[in-house]
Image (cartoon, helix red, strand yellow):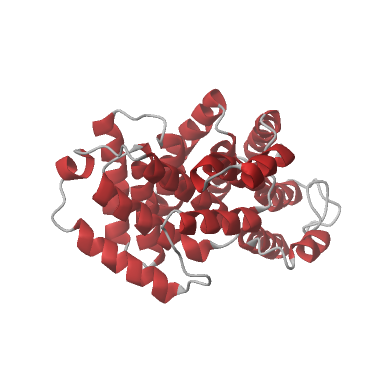
Length: 313
């Protein structure tokens, strides 16, 4: 497939003719766990579409965009937020790219998440509503939570859910629920209340074949179930089922992040030869931590260290 896409990109007469091929190539790289490459190519395409981002953003860049977006949102109502629909195909392409790059950035370059969230909101306020807008507000909610604005995060998380109800756009919940219930609401609600929305999003991802977000919801549900003290054997069974579903759609992006949790569960159930070391059937801490050096896979590295610490304790 890469050869065909590169052929289109090489021989197409103008950038608009190449755009669809670029998008497919970016999604393909993301599906193959080449997340940094996917992000870099995505940023290049976005710049050529007129949406430039800093090369090495920091917390100050994110806060600047959050404050700018907050000012733009002042005085907005549900009517003004969804009253106009985006018709410009270029803007729709940009919104779709930002949604996918946000997922890849979570695993590889999380510093971009506030920037992508704010740009999605700003574009929606200028051009109108589309199905990606709902995810944009969920992502903005997550960005606020990272700056410890929990009241604002909860407010815009609820707004994302309200927009889904008003627009009758049901399928974004597979992605919105992952962000809202997997990261935001668990900081201001009981963890148990976040489980069922994640489970529903996972089941619906299986039904419609949304492979990337199937993995995201499965990972979040399993992690939260573990933290809530659910029976370990039930979490083990769920992870096995989710991995089989992921394999059907030939996607592994993100699912590898569940391996440290899976091995920790095996350790705690007495299914590991060395109970205090994250070494066994599911993963080898020593091997994985060595492999992750230089990959810039922030989430994988942090999970390896977290669950190694837990089993050692």
